[in-house]
Length: 438
Image (tube, rainbow, N blue to C red; front, side, top):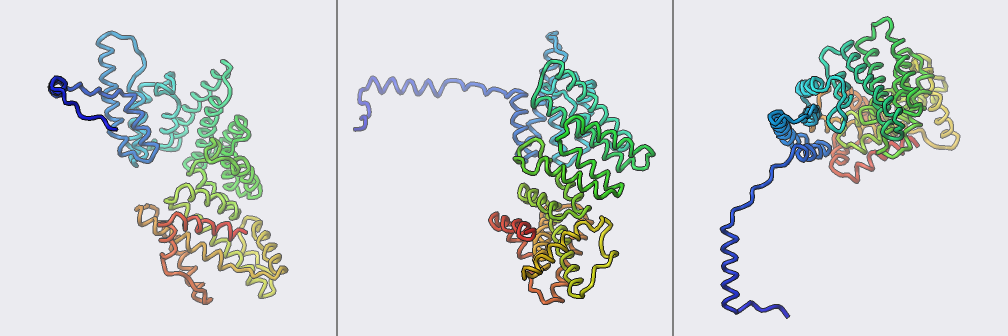
C-alpha cells in the first residue's frame, strides 16, 4: 500500500520552509574544467573522427595552460616544463585531420621551440613525434625532410638506449623501435623521390633499410620499403620475395596488432603488389582496407583496377588458346611474366576439368568496384583527377567490351549505390574478390 500524503500541519510548514530555503540558496559556481580534462575530451573527439569538436576544446586547454604558467611564474613556482606543450601538440594533430598542414606545421614548430632536445617526457608533451611530423610537413622537402627525420631518429635512439640501460623491456621499447623504423623508412622514401638524383641515393636507401631490419627483423615495414627500392631498380623477383615476407609478418594478425600497417601503408602496399603483378595478394589486402573504411576512394579504385588486370589476363589467355597460339612476349609485362604463368596454369587446369574460363566474372566485379569508387569520389569531393580519369577509362573499356560480346551489365551506378547504402550488400560486394580469386 502506498504511503499517504502527510496531513500534519506542522510537517507541512517545515516542508514549505525547506522549499523556500532551497529556492533562495545561492547556486554553486560550476567548476572550470582543467586543461588535462579538456585535452582528454578533445583527444576522444579526434580519435573518433570529429576534429571539428576537438578544436575548441584544445584551444581552451591551451589558453588555460598558458594562464596557469603565468600564475606559476608570478608565484615564483619552480616549473621548467611548459604546461602548454600537450595542447600545442594536440592542436597540430587536429589541424592535420582538418586538412590544414600549414597550421599543423606552425604548432609543431612551437612545440620544437619549447622542447628542442626532447628532454620532456611523452606524458608531458615531449617525444620525437613532432620532429617526424615536421619531416612530412616541411615545405622544402628533400634535405630538409631528411634532417627532421634524422633529428627524430636520433632522439628515439637515445630513448631506446636509456630504456635498455635501465632494464626496460617489452612493448614500451618495441614501440619506440617501430617509430624509429618508420623514421628510417621515411628517409628512404625521400631519397626515392625528392632526392632520387643524388648519386648516393641508393647507398643511403640500403643503409637505412639494413638499420631498420636490425632493429626488429620481424617488422613488415622495412621489407615493404625494401620492395619499393627493388622495384625502382627493376629487380622484380627480389621485390616479390620482399613483399611476400612483409605480408607473411602481419596478414594473419589481429587488426589491432601494432605490426599491422596503417591504411596509407596498406594502400602503398597494394600499389606495389599490382606493380609486380601479384594481383591476388593485392586484392586480399585491399579487401581488408575497404572493409575497415568503406569510404576509401583509393581502395575501391585499386580493387577495381586489380580485378580488371585479372580479367584482362584471362581474356588474353583464352584468346591465345582459342587461336591455338602462344601469347607473344610483347603483350606481357616486364615483370618476367611471373603472374601470367600462374594464370596460364589456372586456365589450363580449368580447361581440363571442363570449367569455363570466364574473364567476364572478374570484369563484372571490377565494374562494381570502379562504380563505387566514382560515386564516392563525387560524394566526398575527392581530389585526384588522374585517379578519376583512369577509373572512367577502365569503366568505359569494360562496358564497350561487354557490349561487343553481348554481355549484360547492370545500369550505370546501380551496383555501386547498393553497395554504398547497404552494409549487408557491401559485404557481398567485397566478397566478390574471394569468388574471383577462387
